[in-house]
Image (cartoon, rainbow over all chains, first blue to last red; front, side, top):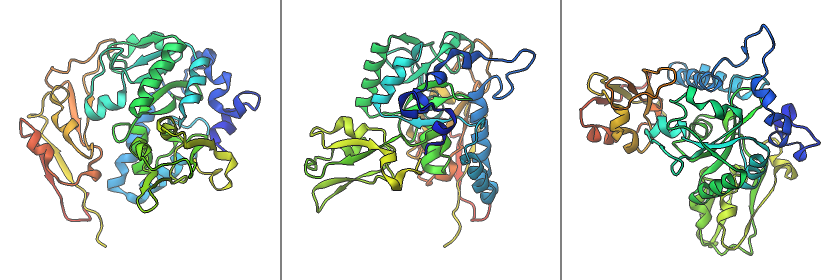
Length: 283
Length: 90
């Protein structure tokens, strides 16, 4: 069972998925402060706090590899109120559902590519990250984060925009910024996305949980064209030369659905992770 | 099997003054070892990428460095040195 759904899901909404629970899109969550108390749980800048906690873990891996393993284990223990950002991969169909629930929706520049490749996204044609929620109205406060501002979108515009990045081959990852508030849909790839990188290379899984789906190939429909192989950011798809077919390793599959949207013969489908006993605890 | 040898990447910040504006090593590294961060952050104002010293270059993923020295070739101000010390040292 997905631990985030355990903690933040509601069986009445969206099959128990935490990101389809309207409570996690409530603006009350965003602003709720108890009188006389600081919003001390996550600090004034939860994203920076999360980045710092990951940075501290990453620092130990040279000096004390054993401590590094220990810290990663603690980070992956996945408690509520963890200082880490929760991230979960979603296929584009579920990203559309989230866009329909959240308000407002805005595109903005990607902070990971800004740091890792000094890649500047200056206008709405270049923006590759989605911000959700009332925080988008306050972007002027953090111009370093939201370089060039944000571009507000209607749900229809947002869907067309997500499609654009899906076609280019980006994985959609839902992000929280402290707590359970769904604060953004990142469009990510390896290696310039920090979340995918920390998961794939260093085993910090909280920032990039696998989705509720896994891809499955219809062996008879697949003609071995290999288009899906280049779409996979996680190395789960391999071309089997002797069989002249592609093969998806479902243990490695993150369920992003990029291969499904690209397959010209509709040979790939997404199936529910919970329907496979061997994958129920693989997140 | 011997313990892995990690690259030591020295960045001379006196020579490398505007890494965000130059970004040659950042975009040329096949392993994406480098990161750039704004170090002069002012509330409500974007940091100017052309201002010397406003951004700093780091190598947080240096354990992925293969020692291909592409970044050294790309660097216009010779600010980078890469060494692979004996295993056991960090």
